[in-house]
Image 1 (tube, rainbow, N blue to C red):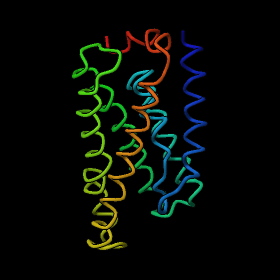
Image 2 (cartoon, rainbow, N blue to C red):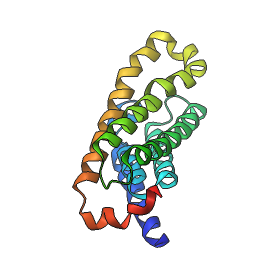
Image 3 (cartoon, rainbow, N blue to C red):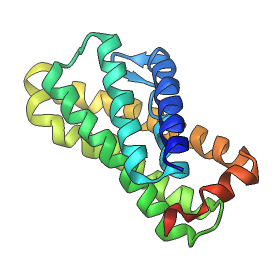
Length: 173
């Protein structure tokens, strides 16, 4: 079973690299969809790893526009976002193979952590560079892209064959 998880993790990191090349602005890209999907399929630890590496790849490709230390904080935040997303999903879904209620609740929390909470954590480092107006301008973009990434991951998860989801069913336990 571990080999399968490692292979899927590598696949999701490769997909994160592809998403990292689909940029919206600076280092904001579609790199987190595989992390959210990995969290749903493989659990919070794998999802956290995929999300962190996904952001690192985006920042690397973008040339670390906000500085390396800022992107390390964002990486940690992405890992936390994926882990919390999966844990909350499991709490709300009650071991259902797919729970719309679980996706909505965990998705709202995922957007909140990835958007406003992340920017609030970064405010002391970003204020001197971007100012309050710049940080506020980032909020709808970061939150919107997080919402799209979560929606895409949820749709893919829903459309996966039942055999794959049943093989991963014990992740919530």
